[in-house]
Length: 312
Image: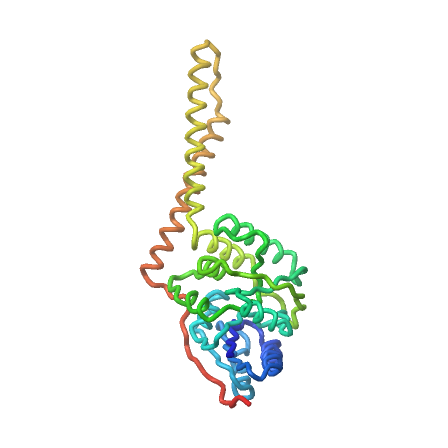
């Protein structure tokens, strides 16, 4: 059995060497298993490129994919999936948090009938900010993509080659990995394990990236925002119609109605805000259609280099 490991790399010069060594040591426990480690350099600004070249010179079974610029984790993962050749594909992080000794639990789940096996951590070793982002993203995918409530998506997963190939066939910009998996298969299983502490450095998941991920997930595979905008417009129209009937009835009954400047301004601002919100949602979808027509790339590969060290 051949296992392909896809690892997007960014600012991980201190951790990627030990991560690769641990993968090779873990796979060596089962001699019938052949590893393939695909390291995707997402145009990291540090000296990661030279470290990856050293890994190619000293470790077997490695492939380094250099991207022409930074495309963030989803684009880097898609670039890695395009170069896999294994029977199973493992997607993991470059910071050493993924518990590599539990790799075989994921592989066993695939052999037991799952299409995708994902680590489930009872306690996440991450900041409160990232916990909040994870919770928001989870609720969004439950609402927009029909994600099961008890299903966790984390940084360590294994999938069958057929699933990886289907995900890699997605050619449009703004790939959203969770949505791609959910639309490909429902045979997704969580495997409990303990997450480890980050070996070095800090997270590169910024507030801007969190917002971009949330918007991408909400609009990539769902028209829920358009329906929400339509509902808000209908509700505003219904409220305006009801208030008009109420004002006419009061006038017919002889009530002395004073002109209300504040209420009028508040109503104008509310309706104007809803109109602009709806236009913004529509504009987001139109913009994505434009990017798809222009065939904006998910990633651009600068070079692909294979290890010069023969496997033992």
